[in-house]
Image 1 (cartoon, rainbow, N blue to C red):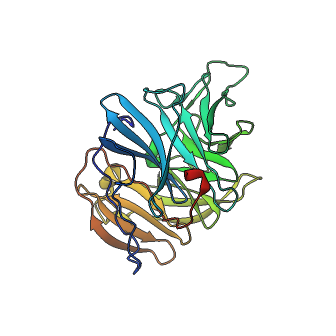
Image 2 (tube, rainbow, N blue to C red; image 1 turned 90 degrees about the vertical axis):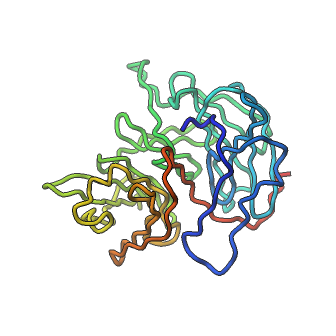
Length: 306
């Protein structure tokens, strides 16, 4: 689904079953709009594209738990189909950043735009991944299914070519290429237990394996194999072909648990890596273009959302 296309109101599903009630998914507290498209979620804040008309939209960053929100000024790409991602870490700073990448979900020589809630404005950052010996080089960005992670002051995402995790900081000064530990089907990166994790399905010796790596030494860029298992534990014997239709959802921020959907009804399941246990949570229903964002409520008020 193009990220500029208006979508129905978002639905929230409790994947843990806690006693504490979920934050209401209703967005009545936001400014008047025709529809909302959720673009990104980071540490309790949501980045939304609020549509006022068929071709008129603006960015809003909000906190559902406190019903605080702020409308962002238009960037130089206003009205175009750009990929935008939110960066926020309340443990470090109380302000947030929004990264807006060029049309077509690629970073070419055009670079990117970065919004800072501290300054209240957008700034342009040149592409730091361009190979100086080949000015045609650029990085393709994978869509939302592979996830993106804000960690150590940098936004991380999976790049298709040449098979890396790319990272850039909020100032546009640090641009890193972290080689991936394995090449398989659609990968996932997530932050769990304070570290960057990488998961994917790989084929080996006639089997399909789920492999999970952790980047414990971030500076050394050394991936350590954390978990490996036959995919049949998750998809069932004789149903490995269903891997083609699966979708990553998230990795638990504090436990060795992965959430994903399987089957044609998009059944949400959790896989406990410690106990090799799969648990069905609910059927999310058929959808030609499913989109899932992990969300954990943030109950702190932020001055940057006023």
